Amino acid sequence: MFALKALLVNALVASSALAHFTLDYPTSRGFDDDNEPQYCGGFPSVASPRQPFPLGQGPIHIDSHHALATVVAFISTSSDPTSFDDFNKTSNGTSIPLASSIFQVKQGEACFNVDLGNLGVGLTNGSEVTLQVQYDGGDGNLYQCTDLILIEGYSVPSNETCTNDASLSGASSSSTASSGSGSSSAAATSAASSSAPSSSSSSSSGSSSGAQGMFSKNIVEMALMGVLAGIAGLALL
Ligand SMILES: [Cu+2]
Image (tube, rainbow, N blue to C red; front, side, top):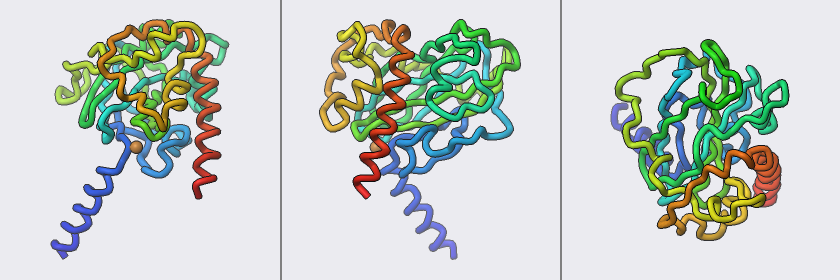
């Protein structure tokens, strides 16, 4: 029995090596390898209860199973977001900026800090948000969501603090930084290059500050790409 259990654990570990990426903190709504290309990784419903998370700076931890991947995080201020559109604008039409820069991570665990109270979309103590992480390790955009309630002064567990912030590493994707106007978006960039070595641009060190203004476009493209990816996925079946 114990041997069987060990075997199962091994099998799990082996299969998680195939996992594209996991969102480890705050806890993800759920993880399903096959559905990770879908909106919120295939988990469209809000998880209850929401997890407390700092209104100020707070850490996000992921585990990347690709050699090099492009990562970005964005939020919805809807209490029940149902599509990528809900991560684009607030209910009163205000554009929601990206919650992080667009940056690259190498294989293994990585963390980055977000400061949701500073996004300028009116978040306050007790606000409910959903944070979605978009990840592209070369096989298309993948998603994970986590449902949060923002608490002013909330202290995350000490083992979850993020001192080596990957989003500040200067490894932002060059295609994003250099194409400047219009066409650059995390989704467009990564989707266009999902079969190409977009990841090879690791030596670049552009700032991705321009990305925030293009968020609306990004999210629309992301949604589109999501649909296309879905169609492509079906075609593969
Ligand atoms: Cu993958």
